[in-house]
Length: 145
Image (cartoon, rainbow, N blue to C red):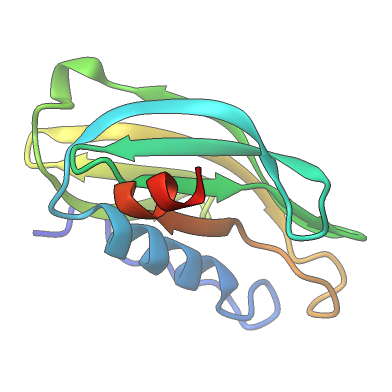
């Protein structure tokens, strides 16, 4: 069951980055439960840092959504709302509303986690945007320590 119909943006607004980001998040969280969600400073590939949301799942995996900015393009988490009364429910989907500015991670009982997302393709499509999404299983994190 899809609670949120797939949004369609014009080819001038998005090059497929935002639907791809949602699909990556969906693949990582569907079938799991959220244990926690927290904002952190994450290390970027070039050694700097970016704000990120870490979603810890019931199997110990951590899903990191890191803000990305490239010149006049970028994607940033503005805020999130975790519904603790629903975290015991298995996630059944991820959807968006309002032109990919509100993301819904939901279970059969409704939204478990809502994200308010600011994004812009900038001068389409010369610069990168979209979250940097990384999934780290528990054993991968232990091996890196």
